[in-house]
Length: 246
Image (cartoon, rainbow, N blue to C red):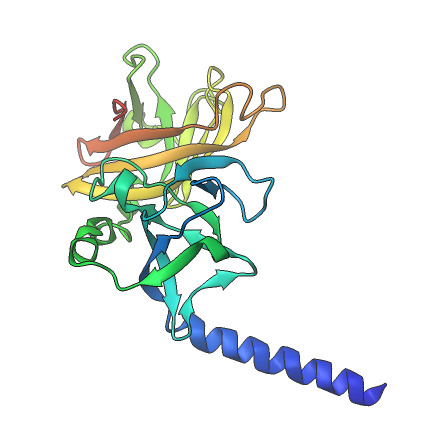
């Protein structure tokens, strides 16, 4: 019994060390979709046959994946996809198709020149909001429109808090909470942040937590929003503009 326990412990220790060693070598890699029984390969939201189908991939489609010293990085029988060249190419104006595919239906390839040059989104992958943009903002309902919301710092009017404690947003590097009574989503997360010019950012946000009375899927709250964040007047005012899709 002791021997079996020691062998199991040794396996776990070496396996963990090996995983950590290869994680350090992780980097961009490319793969191609093989022929499938029905001619299509499902790109799923989760690494499960019950995962929601995001897109139907074709044989020959080239994919962005993660590679290690041993080849494509896998999770059991699944591989995480970060982009589909046919669907996304070099378009950084919207989130790329990402998800999971069955490992047996793809093969690793050398990234073609256009794909090596094309992943321009990495230029902005680590952009962060300015520190002075973070924190609490109060909503100016009288001046806001359907496509543009205006906020101000409590200090702008000589206050420590918003007049209505439940009528504002709180920005962080991960996303923002929305306490406005008319908003059905409590917490939005940022999938991507891009700095487009001084004090102006483009963010891709999606609802992560909705009020108990609402369902993310049924009430159409789970979609991606493209927003522009801009501060003016020495960061005392914040404009949040909803950008058109596409």
